[in-house]
Amino acid sequence: FSYQACNDVSCLIPSSKSFEIVTSIVDAGAPVIQINKSEFELKLSHLAGERSTNEISQLISESGLVLTLGFIFLGGLLLNLTPCVYPIIPITISFFVGQASGKISKSFFLALVYVLGMSITYSVLGVVAAMTGGLLGSSLQNPLVLGAIAGVFLLFAASMFGAFEIRVPAFLSNMAGGSKQGVLGSLFMGLTVGIVAAPCIGPFVLSLLTYVAAKGDAFTGFLLFFVLSLGLGFPYIFLGTFSSSIKNLPRSGEWMVWVKKVFGVVMIAMAVYFINPLISNFIYVALFTGTVVLGGILIGFLDKSTAGFGWFKGLKPAIGTLMILFGVWTSVSAWTESNTEHVNWQPYAEQLVAQAANEGKPILIDFYADWCIPCKQIEKKLFTQPEIIEKSERFLALKGDLTKENSQDVQGLRLKYKVHGVPTIILIDGNGNERRRFTDELLKFSTEEFLEIMEGVLSTN
Image (tube, rainbow, N blue to C red):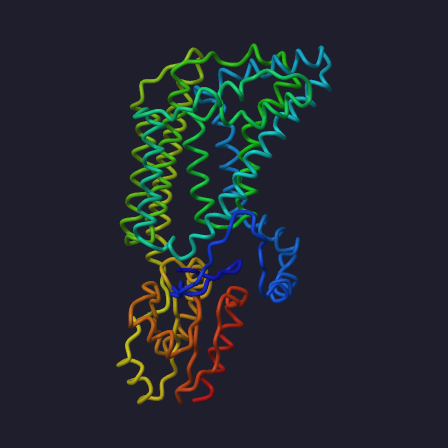
């Protein structure tokens, strides 16, 4: 089997092990015989509660996650505008108002319970997807697996563009749509609303499930789907409290099909995101930019959908223009980053190492993999700084590519330098002695601190 061990910031090299297990077939109901129970209990006691609330707070505070959560919340709001969801909003709000007998506080409470039901359903889905997706381990670096995931996103995108429709069995729709009274009725409706709306929100939810499964982080899965449910449920809380606002809602129409197309473009972009490790950065940026820009042109200017409210005529080109600008910004940012000066790395070669040893020249080796995010963060944070670039000229700077973990060259490098995971940065003095070794903790170092370390290695010559 294949596996890959990871912590919050780095991963060991994907590994595979082969072994044989002798099993016995027993009768149904036979008692389970546990072995090595004490050993497992000891290990689990050390792991329990390992993640502190401070780490979670730090995770939430990261700008990348906050931006992602904002887009997920916005996505939840937009899902309310799809043809399967939008028409049931007035019906659901009328249910709350009728049950509340005109009391605003009770109507608000019923809407809140409804959203709680949605949150439970989607949060559980997110956690389960993350936990089961984590079992995929290093197979998520397999080109066939990544290609299959991208294919799933493209199928969902085709569904959003109207190529086919995901249908829910009638008995499930009838069960979910059954009218029930009071608080329990609101909770049940919230728990099952995903079934009724599955033809429209299903592709987006399943796409997000695929993304969460690839990440394999249960907390991230919970958080993303909880925020999605809040976005989906926000209109119900607002309209349930101010029910008179329902009459101001736009009428259903072609514009809801337009909203589905917006999600279709997003899913094509996600398909491109998943094949990133399989293609060069230039091709990835070109595909991603092309998807967003062409999607913006289609959504904003070529689509013929109309609506019975005037501001839709301005909304379409506005959204299209924003998508085009985002695509251009992505391309310009990638070009700027690719042209940023960095350490003059050379691909690892034994001849270069032997030459440096003969000359008494110190060596700086950066072991990385294409799928290693912290490797890219370290490169951007430290190895693009002018002071470090200047100091690195006194080193032989080598890049050791460990992406293809099963190749003999990679296994030889790992064995020679005792590399267990990436990132790994090794500094060797002019006498051929390893002086310092760093993994992901290098992200915590400032430019000045790393300069001192480099100077310390140089001073030993």
